[in-house]
Each structure stands twice: as C-alpha cells, then as structure tokens.
Length: 128
Length: 128
DNA sequence: GCTCCTAATTAGAATTATTCTAATTCTAAT
DNA sequence: ATTAGAATTAGAATAATTCTAATTAGGAGC
Image (cartoon, rainbow over all chains, first blue to last red; front, top):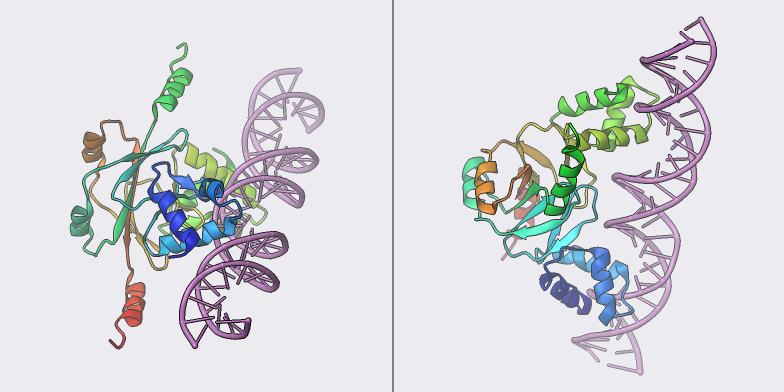
C-alpha cells in the first residue's frame, strides 16, 4: 500500500460525506500540499478495483466514493443529495430470485428531502 | 410532445438494449439524417425530467437510457454489461424500513457474466 | 396566404470529469 | 552509491455533456 493510497483510503473510510475525487483531493492537499489530482484518481481507481472502496454514480453528477461497509443510499430526486441508510441485507433474497451468484448490489432509494418537498409544495399548492 | 421528442421516446421504449445518448443519436439519424446530437440530449433530459424514461449510471460509463417499466439490472463486474431482470417490487418493504415515501428505487445486482467468469477462472486456476 | 410570436432545433464552443502519457522522483534491494 | 521498478507528477488529451447564440418551424391571428 503506497503512501498516498493509504491516506486516501483513510479519508474515504473515515468520512460519511460521499466525496467526489475533487473533494478528496482538496482534503488531501491540506496535509500533502504537493499531491496531484491524477494521483487521487489513480489511487481511487486502484482502491476501487481492489474492492477497498465503493464508487457511487448518480446520473449527471461526478462519481462519489464511499466506505464499503454494508449500507444503502437515499437519493433526493430534487437536489441529488445522498443520505446513508442501513437496510437489511438483501443478498440472499436476491440470489434466490435471480439464480446466479450476487457479488454485491447497489440499492438507491429515490425520495424527496425535506427542503425539496417544501419547494415542491409551494410551486404546486398555489391558488386553485 | 415535439417531433423528435416523440421519436426518441419511441426508440427508448421500444428497445431492451440500454442505449447511450450517442447510440440513440445513431439510431435516430437513420430516419432523420439532419438531427443534432444536442437535440438528442435535450430531449433525453426533458423526457427524463418528466419521468417518461429512466437513466442508468454505471460508474465510469456513459449514461444509458431505458424504459420505465419496473425492472432491475444485473451489471457485470468484469465488462460492465447490463442485463434486465425482473424481481418482485420492493417498494413496500423498503418504505416500511426507512419510514419515508419512496418515489422509486434503483437496484443493480453485481455479478460476473459467463464470459468474464471464464476469464477469471483461467487467470486464477493456474498451476498451484 | 402573410406576419409575428414562441418554442424547437441546430452548430459549435465550452465545460467537466476523467484518463493517458511521458517525464520525474522515490524506494528499496544489490 | 547504483539501479530497477513502482509511484507520482504535470499537463495534454479524451469523452460526455451542457451551454449559447443563431436559425428554423409551426401555429394564432389577421
């Protein structure tokens, strides 16, 4: 495990904030001012390929990185914000249904966060 | 519904192949040679915002578009290929667990397709 | 059938996220 | 110290997508 690899892994594992590569880069620069963005991408890719971190894609947004500990995500339809949520493990249930070995799964629940729900109400509930 | 909007919706709904914007553009040009890629993106974005099509993000790959009819996806860890699979609807079960209204959910099952499983075996099962 | 208005479409520039490449720097073994 | 190999760097390159400004098309009213 390389010098920056270790640091980046620690950053991702020690955070609940679903950072983008750019944000991880900013964090890392605070302790390692000379580090290059390419190094961050290289290490994130390697760590991901090794299964040590998760990568989360939400349509239209830059990929975010996350610890691997089993948990799922709520994604706000309005603003794209991610929130952690821990649901029961579905692997067994899913494997039984599809009949092939499931290595992992990615479950995103789409909802409306409080802020966006309020906005939606305002625009809809007008003067009928 | 605009001229191209309608055509693009038909293309996406009538296909099981999880096309990218570029692929949809190529398809569409066969019947409408003059159409612009920007028009495809504009329409895909509008259709998606209106909830008429789905957008699927897999890390590292261009977004794909899909019909909205309830179904889930198998994603191959090796090559990224998508396959359709229809599992029982989890909305109720999930809503009960998280305690907020779930508008939709996105479930991707990670597995190894046959081709990739074979490759994996070759490289691993060598001479111990 | 014209005229005007608006929305749709277009071309291409711009942006963003990410990857690639080649040069440089480390590291650690000899 | 020397050297080989891996890690890192800077910055160019690429790919996907969005933005902008100009153009076009379609319909409402004359």
